[in-house]
Length: 251
Length: 388
Ligand SMILES: Nc1ncnc2c1ncn2[C@@H]1O[C@H](COP(=O)(O)OP(=O)(O)OP(=O)(O)O)[C@@H](O)[C@H]1O
Ligand SMILES: [Mg+2]
Image (cartoon, rainbow over all chains, first blue to last red; front, top):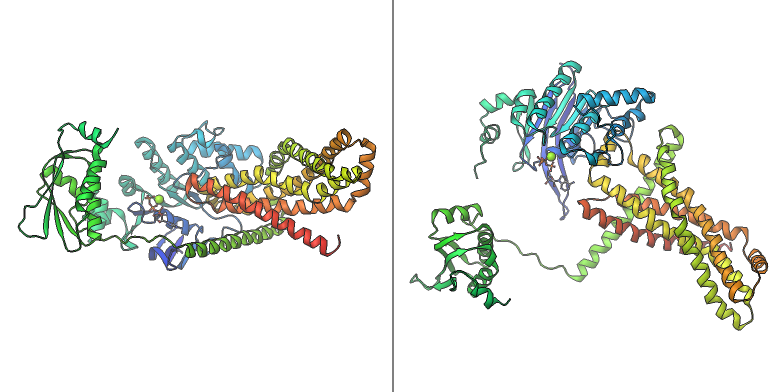
């Protein structure tokens, strides 16, 4: 089997606490993401899913453990162009730039394409996420769901082979959410794009995710790894079954 | 409206609480609540219940009898549950008793039926430890700023090697905002500085008949000290604050993180163009400030000291050397770096939403003013020591 796209070993996430000892968010996380896979990160609110993404893309340095992306070790954001696109939970569009400029920014920086070519790519990406005609609007003029979609288009701008999406369909209407799932599946099938996504939408997990991990806040660890449908039906961990069957946690 | 008035507005018209000793044991008391406990009267309920339970001591036991409560809302229940855990912290066991199904559900919702946890009270910090903490905080911030300065120098060196990767597009608009737009205020303030100084100096110099030396006084202090410093302070208030707020709101909305994941180093992309813009603009503004400061002195000299324009200007020329102006400009370049680096560092260190942006912007202006004065004093000592 070829080398995994992402390899995480013994990752410990945390930050310096008030009393000197670090506050640990997740301890000793180990998993990998194969090339061309749709991989979901699941877990309750506040368990550290978005934080895990920050570690994976190299925004934070781990307290312990190893991360390797495309066999290259922990991404170094200081040199060169990162081999992935990222969509943040809040969208994080640049407020001083129009939607079109947001998407075109990294094309301008990292390619030699002439202006018209960049404009054409921007339009194509906007079409992909169903935002035709929004290229000259500023992020402040968009709705929450439109911002998310613009952020996905921005993450896709440089045709990365790996993309991180933090709750892409939260705040979208059901139809757009299904269309987005469809889009992710298509990109995955046609381009072989590896997708790592955080989501709470159970139907979309079962439909698009080939594998998943589930983080747990209390034990600060990964409590399940595998095919979500499989886990739903056959996991022997009650917390995992409760999550997939939308049952409230027993106190 | 007094408490008694409020009491009379109560629908039932009678006191709500009664303290009844029902159990034979001397250590168990019962606090009976009745009627409708609504949040609008929560203040009164709080005061009453607190007063009744104030005398309880460690080892006592009290039951809140809820059997005659017709209805209670969430806020009031939250207060009762809070009082219960307060009692637990004092070692008094308190339980809700006799509640009907509806009330019991609410008790459960607010966790009034599980063991009350003893909360550790935080003691107020002593002056000594506050002092220590702010000292540590100061050095922490200082280290942050110096580290940031180091990173900026590294980024600048990297940019010199690969000039193509710079964000040159941002340079001109930043220079316009920081420079051209600041001209009116720089002119006004520096004119007034020259004007006021000449006025104050004139009253003294007149006594010695040394009127013409007003030109020396104004010319030297404006070019060596006040022109560069005043202009830098104006720029700190205008552009420094703007940089800190801009970068601060970009930090809290994860825009800086997004930039980094796109391979744009925020220092190279955001900080260097701003710093370079200020380094180009501040000396020019300082030169302008020097000029209008001297003009401010000239106006006083001509109107109230009986000097001629030619006389004043030739005296200024005699007193002020090329080096006096130039040393001021050197200072202003260093000031520009300090303003931009501190503002950007503070902006990028922002956490905690809109309030954090405000706090950091304030902190950035204060730290910058402090740094400007320190740098200025350093230059003065340096120039003096080397007889420059
Ligand atoms: N550097 C840090 N300093 C302090 N707290 C932090 C830090 N990083 C993460 N946290 C905390 O870690 C917790 C996990 O946050 P995170 O955003 O990863 O949760 P999440 O799983 O994405 O939740 P949600 O589903 O609500 O988005 C939060 O309580 C957050 O405040
Ligand atoms: Mg999150």
